[in-house]
Image (tube, rainbow, N blue to C red; front, side, top):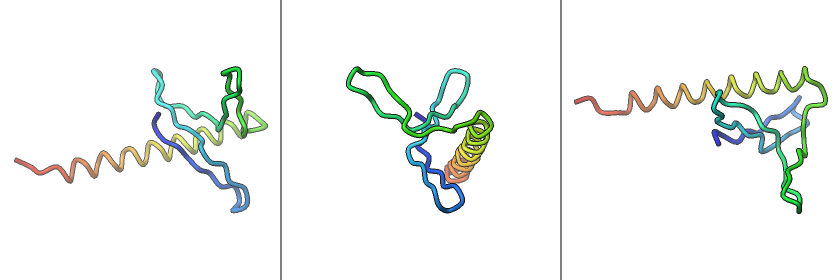
Length: 82
């Protein structure tokens, strides 16, 4: 797991627990889901169109990469030089 994300649309609709998952081909976005009694998972919130799916994925992954890059930079500057 890379991160959990909360997004807000137009300051009026919020979706929590969107996941950024570290996959073999790079990070990807997983929508919130719950586990059913038979062990399968079902999404409880998801984009109704492929255009919105793409918009959410691009936005979430861009912000994820920005934050990861920022943290890496902070670690490099916080490490004492010998």
